[in-house]
Image 1 (tube, rainbow, N blue to C red):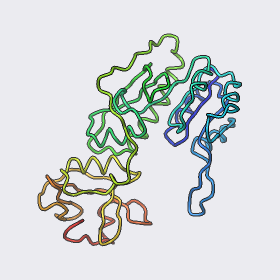
Image 2 (image 1 turned 90 degrees about the horizontal axis):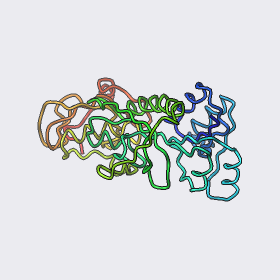
Image 3 (image 1 turned 90 degrees about the vertical axis):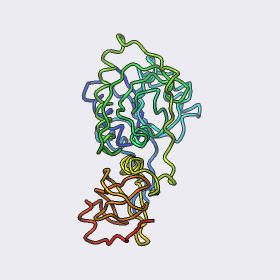
Image 4 (image 1 turned 180 degrees about the horizontal axis):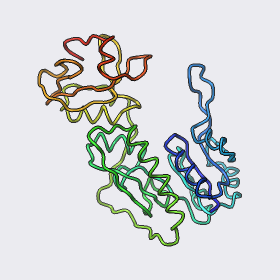
Length: 299
């Protein structure tokens, strides 16, 4: 097929690579414009932009798709279909209507659960047993379109957002190739009205650990916010990110250090397995404790 690919972050790259490997013709890659990044704050292309250029594909990065000239340029591509995965811009109706077979979205949840911006984070933070990928026909509503393909994967007790991100990205690449190959045989299934939830963007205020919460909730928050934005706590005036954890035995006043990197919570305890000090790389708990003395109580 003649495909327009629309995506921006690392999560989108496996789908682009899978489409190219399957022999589909990518007539254009749309991605977010380069953004300032790094210490020098120089403009850096998105992961999709960089990979598309390495593959020799034409790249476009408009700030908006609303101007008429952008709509006209998109329509002039004459695409059979558009594949959208974590693109980051709202698609006007004229864009949705331009490809002959419409626009397909690779969404990282089992719709209608976790429509919206942060489905992987929210699934872990909510304690869901499973999540997955849906290949969805796009329409004007937020992740409301009928589903062509869905596949589930379990969420393990140790899984972080980073772990699940990589697994789902690979699934998305495999499934979009399957969807295009079977497009005429797939029957779009409308999403049920029951069970709709919204994966709102992560608020920075959610990242600070409140040790009065139950241990299970704190554990899910640490894993769900890892690696970005990263759950954190204050240790002797230093903000330390907590990246991996598990439930542990022990009890005490919330915030009490029970030994090693095991902390009492409002109910139960959490053992931090991996953390990151400011300006340092992520380290296992045993390594980080060689250079960081924990106080008797964490705030």
